[in-house]
Image: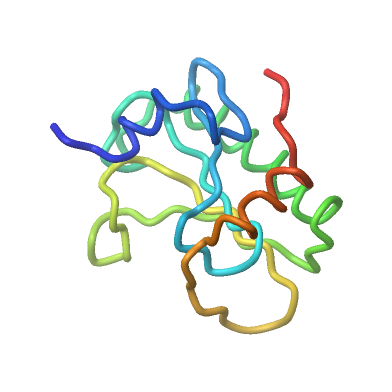
Length: 130
């Protein structure tokens, strides 16, 4: 299997958070400034396959990072969610939770995460301890 999220699990340099269950990274095609992904370390195609105890831990981490988006990035709101299957918009078939900070109402368009934007966000959000 050639899964980009399984490969990224091994490269912790850009992880905002990393434990035995999941890791957090910035989305490389963010919908908004600070768009993050909480990704399971084990390969599960979507959240329907994840054992409830593991899923609960992932959503707890998502809650922490949603709070960081509000407190550290100044987001006025946050969308937290996951897509299940291609028809629902899932592109990478590995369980992940989107944390999308919102700064104004309505829909935001994706863009490519540039190196300057990434460095700035990494310095604001920092590494979270395990």
